[in-house]
Length: 519
Image (cartoon, one colour):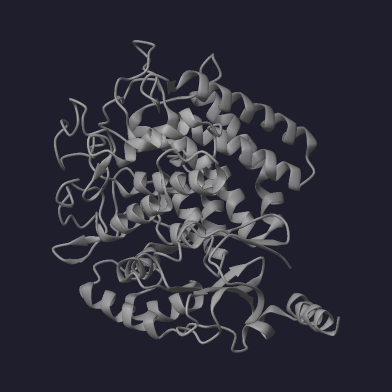
């Protein structure tokens, strides 16, 4: 009983001491030594620093040390790319007269809007930046798209499909900033209505041109074809579900019921209209033929990003295509179309933005997130295992290279990893995907929630890694550390899987497994 009272007293202090008082104490496992070495390495690779935005290379170590969770693991490729992606994201942070934004291209491009902003990867940006310690950057960025861009003479928000509502809700689960939801719920709802006006068909589903999905030159698509695609319909399902949950948080019953009905409708519509039972795959329904496209495309995995499919064997069997070299499996990543199809990689190479088979980090991020959801939220996995997830994440990490040096571009050849835009200045540090979120939320398995339960559900296994540490994760206003040490010799805190808040251990298990801890 005395031990329990002491533990409760400690948790009381954690909850009620000012955050900066607790955080200033020595309560982390990792220090900035590795981060400093990585920053030195990355800065050396970018010695010309052609574009400088809010945080210059020389200031990047300080900014990163103040803003990102630290991570250490035995896989040097994943660890290096984890820090590289944070370092590269920082290059896109831009301070404007309308607040902070994140750019997609490091150089100015003609199809961008005000401040060189582009909305195509907005969902990825929000998922990634939700883990930054200073949330003003993401606050301003979302505010720009919801409140600034609509007032601009040339609006760009709806230039591309978006899962902004889903991303905003999942960001809320990290910071619990209810005031941000209160400010933006009606605006988000009005934006959903605008999508219905612009893209909803008489049957209630949504059409989109492939170029407006940021997936031009696809096998199924067309720049003018009003095809019913798994992309926008999954996004709008995810958005409706998120609006349902945000409305519930704010006790807005009418909006909650309204969007619950919309989510239910779209779920059924996607399952009924876009599922090809003969080919066991979600596909694009073509406008002209009013039938499903004969090609399996990577966008068919997107429904799992939002946990849309039912937990059934027939749906899970789709993922076997990820293991097939005539399907989507390739040396350098997941192809955007099945390799067996006669139109695979037939649209040229590098002259535009071809989505007929080449590997795109944008799509890879979506597929790996969907794969994570399959493994953690479903009972039926088909032939998919945790090793498959790890292999694809590792392959994705390894793809960040050009001529043996770290690089992030637009899209790649699936056989040799060549970046098909070459060393185009606009393509360097291309901010069109995410990576750190896949490590934090999926590989390590930090699962944000609305309640006061800490849920960690790692996909990484004890057979794969003997140790890892994810440190300085700011969640619900507190600083978390997640640590696995099979032998106890790496971190000298004993054997097993441990979770700390502000340096105080709140949970310990001997095995690396899912844990739920009430705080």
